Image (cartoon, rainbow, N blue to C red):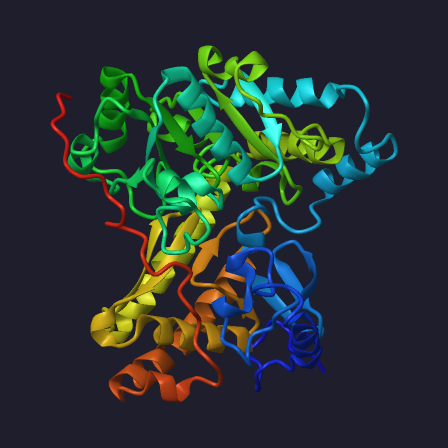
Length: 447
């Protein structure tokens, strides 16, 4: 019978998953539509490739194996799978329709709600994916400033202006590559050294896992003010998680434009661009940012229900409390075992497990932990992406699993044979270069 969430005696049977995988090969490039969901991010031959359903914080793969899910759709499921209030809002809207030939009232109602909870959200536009609204924000910044170059920090989607600075930039003209450059997080000098008269905007994830130091975000705000640069926060991960109002509320720093998706609709496809009215109003006549499905009503109904639930139940506080318990528990187990080459870090609502190369191949160590978690009914990609559906029972069980799995890692490392413990191919890196890449030459800047 299929594995359940328990200390199973064997690895899950993934026969049906493998059958779908074989059907997808040669038909769907990279197998998955989202790279982080793809088979390259899981131990091949052990991990499921295809999932069938979910409820709360648990999912079931196509073979019927059950797992506690700490990926949560790679971010969107802030409340959990099949969350009643959101699903009921979608079903109710379905009775009236999905898309229309005129504007739907939900477009106004949701915009008003976002304006009320997100700082500086003076105007609001919708689209479908995070890359849509980050790219629209770049176009707005260029239109507003009359300048063309972009400084970025973090991950911002698949469009040319951003992906040109990664090592997956084939197919992008050199002219586009020379308009975007990277800065380093918490390195204000890397920002100052990159400023010149052609910088239209700075776009960054306000935090990923490392906290801002020495007033980094506040200093960034001042640099932008002093140099006529538009400051854009990419809040795909921080929005509605750190606080209902996102990083702007949490850190007390206002961006000129802010971009949201993922957590805002508990899984329905929508993204949101917000910001200062004098910048945003350029969407009316000066730039073109329109899409047929921007006002799709099912996603708007889900957004309204999700934001209300996040606000009324103070979900960000819940995510932080449960995530902190996992983070502290993981680190305590590692400390008790005397292993200093793995730790859990990051903001409590979203943490990451890292593995130090001094002890071996980090991807192999991560793969071994993942492999043993999957056997015991936990779907894990090296993160704790917390949702409102994760229970104390889930967390207590997960910590008990870590207490069993981390000693296996220690034994493998002590034997210098982590690869020998793997039952399949290890996970792959998404990008080979993510920092100190395509940085701008030092400029003579007066900031």
